[in-house]
Image (tube, rainbow, N blue to C red; front, side, top):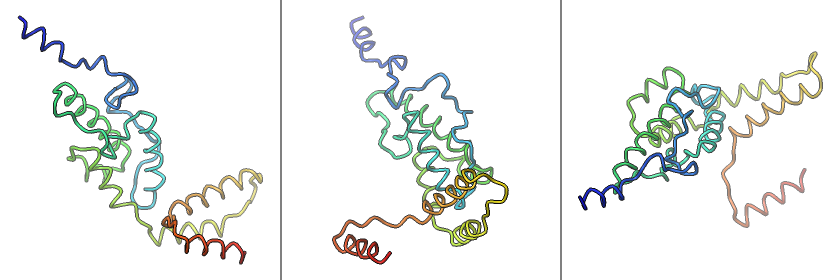
Amino acid sequence: MGDSSSSSNNVTLVSKIEASDPLYLHASDSSSLTMVSIKLKGTENYKVWSNAMNLALQVKNKIGFIDGTCAKSTTDEILGKQWNRCNSVVLTWLLNSASEELYLGQVYSRLASEVWSDLKETYDKVDGSVVFNLYQKINMFTQNNQSVSEYYHKLNIMWKQLDQILQLPQCNSEASKEFNDFNHLKN
């Protein structure tokens, strides 16, 4: 009897997991939930999709499942099972937000972090045709019958998309600072 009472004290109760814990699942955190309103199609919308998905997962406190920082417990069987459950929920959220052909390529995956890194490795690339098409769209965009604020808003969205696609690598060297200062003098 002493064994069962001491072992019951060591059992983790899933119902006691606090909302701030990545292993916490709210009643609304179902596998059928659509986390973002756009479907990942590939290179042409990866940046927008990944930013939106990243925000949604931050809200749900589930970033650790895609960046690998939330590790599965190897010492507590109950927490290990809860980690499996959360990982599966995050995995379904990722799959639910992908186009059908991307879904089919990832549906047999078991880890949300592997799907996330695979999608990033495959689609987080600068596609010259996407850049060209966006440049062309920006250059041909006219106000027509739109209000100035509507026109500005739509144009600004396209510029932000272009900035996101063409992110320059960060360099904090002194030469980089001097080059940047020199460029500002020329303009």
